[in-house]
Amino acid sequence: MGAPGPLSLNTATVRDQWNLAQAIEGCARHGIPGISPWRDKVAELGLAQSAKHIRDAGLFVSGLCRGGMFPAADAAGRRAAIEDNLRAIEEAQLLGAQCLVVLGGGLPPGSKDLPGARAMFHDGLAAVLPAARAAGVTIALEPLHPMTCADRSVLSTLGQALDLCDEFGAGVGIALDVYHVWWDPELAQQVARAGKRIAAFHVCDWLVPTTDLVFDRGMPGDGVIDIPAIRAMAEAAGYAGPCELELLSHHWWKQDPEAVLTRAKAAHATSC
Ligand code: ZN
Image (cartoon, rainbow, N blue to C red; front, side, top):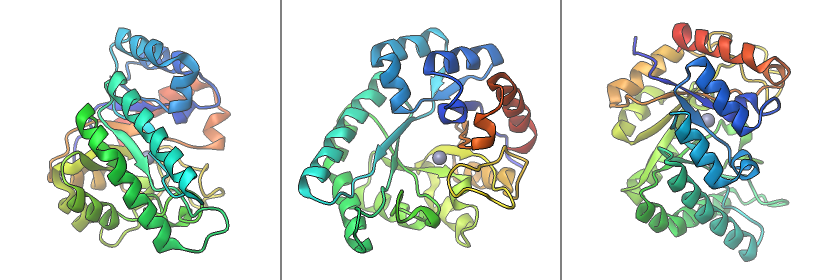
């Protein structure tokens, strides 16, 4: 069994309860050494203020969520997505984030052209990669479970993400989120293939039954994913970084955030 790596709190976990300042203070209070903020929370507090507050609290930034989402209905939409990603790269640099998490984005509204949407993702990535390299920001491609292909991510598997890593080379890695890849029959083989390109490791659990395709994720240990086994695969591939808890859950969003962090620390110690 691999060691879980230092815990980092993805702010989506306490999205409805806390703003970024509260999440930073919560991490510091609970001895959670890392944080991964979402961009809307950073914008709310202000970029410079966010960076200062995180630095003053002594936290590391395991990632910034999120960029990508390149497919769009027209050229203006695709251009806007690229410009937004260029801003995200600057934000990640200023925050000292270990990576910028990049999602595929879904099909443009009304479209049935999945290969076309994947081509738009490819081209969007190509357009922003030079800026990411210049800024020293690692792009972490995060494949999402194929159930989200229509509306969130035309990037569905590790194999597909690693094909892009192979093509683009330096500056592109993957965010390995156990929730999205645990079902993949090629998981072990693709994690080994990823090697040092694993830039982030996200955890939560798959509940049975799952009542919401996006917002019913479980605390590690409450579901069916063998998280330590996946962690061990990642470590064998060369990953020794943080273990980022990313819990998008209507259930956990209703709980006292202090209790969520207490449970998160226990779950990290026993089930990651
Ligand atoms: Zn994730």
